[in-house]
Image (cartoon, rainbow, N blue to C red; front, side, top):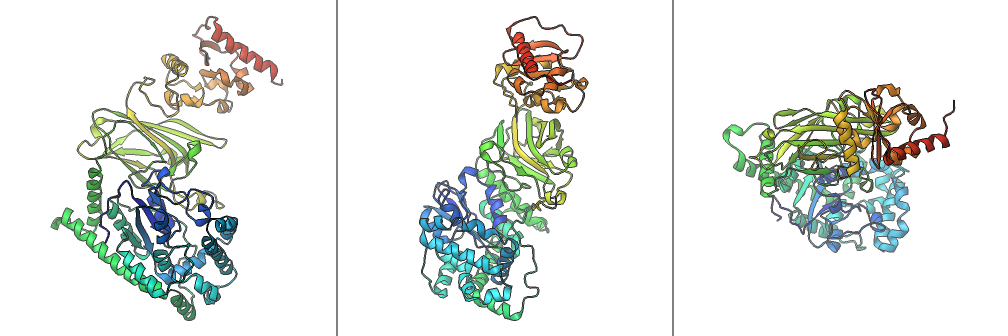
Length: 585
């Protein structure tokens, strides 16, 4: 029997034996948060394997529609987990799901030839799945489950997942599969029961020492949840016959799940309980202490500096699955489904830290404007140093200071709590959007670094190229003379050093230029800058220039910069642009 709790070893590959319609997509979203994106096998279907990276021990997590014996063929050190469900309700749910998404088979049809070339029997299995869906959408449930082809194709999916390989063309007797599957229950490091999902998530958290999973979003659920309503007794008899082996296996799995859950409770109470602690919420608090002990045992080095991008694993709750494109640095996670999201970070004490957070989406202005941060018991004021939301561009940068006094030196981590006023779905704003998840903010990046003076060499802004001498000297010049109430037009990268006062070039024309007192012109961008902007600042005073930038002000207390090559290069570039593209009177 696998030890519980189980400590994943560096050579282990966590393999999810995914029986369809057993909350697998929901579980996958929780599993993915625990691993770096590069450690997760991207293939989830056999049609993916024909054209994408193959199953191998190079990954630490594989979570596709693969069976136990699929994994053992290709993975050196598999560690197995699974989820199980009442077989009759599972079959009805799969039938409903195939009807809810009637065109999904067409996507797989495109890959049939490639899968056949990859492995003949896998191609047969894929074609069988396609034919199943075609029959499901063409007939009612009663006729569907009485179809001999369907009865054979959908027979005992739990047993097939636990005791066969997709590439195996043989048809072992049910008794043989049941014997293997039952034995392998003990070899699963974790398995859960859909009908007791909350307890299953508690056991999952305990089994791996993870942050207690008390907040999750159910994904890929069928539109109908009352599965037995209107189902005739004759149809139910057919469903039970199709799932004869699975029904026996499921009963055994439920019994052993209860044994494991009771074992967990006994261990938690013995380790963390006391007569005074036996309350309704005690198991959750015991799980929290178990998680802290497991986190401590991992000996995370304490850090003053962190760059958290969402290709990385996270320890916390209140985050949806990873989305976006890693190649364009747009990976993000929505906060939600609840308004609070947490991160546990091994922060070192001894100095104040600057927190910067980059957000690339927000469900409502109230949510964007209402974000709060608490560290320990201390509210941390956040400043919106930049808020751009126009012409398909959404960017908000938040910044705050975490004082060293709130960093918990006596614990293995410090907990950051982000809170928004509410969450709601994208579908509630646009009924044509299928995304029904309650979300808040789309967070792209969080950076923590020791607090230093702005523009110091050790400063670590999110956008600004601090190591570029021309950028830095330009920002330093303007900050020396700029009043914090003055508006400035500049490239977006400067926003962190002029909090709340910067307007990007394209937005500058939406208000009269008289609202602004400063403009920073990137000379390399002059050929593409809006002509009205260049025309509007012709009467402004050029007060600074270097090989990359020119700085102009509308203030009347400045003398024009003495002539020198960098200034002349700016004037010539603007003159050339205006002469080649004159503004119509």
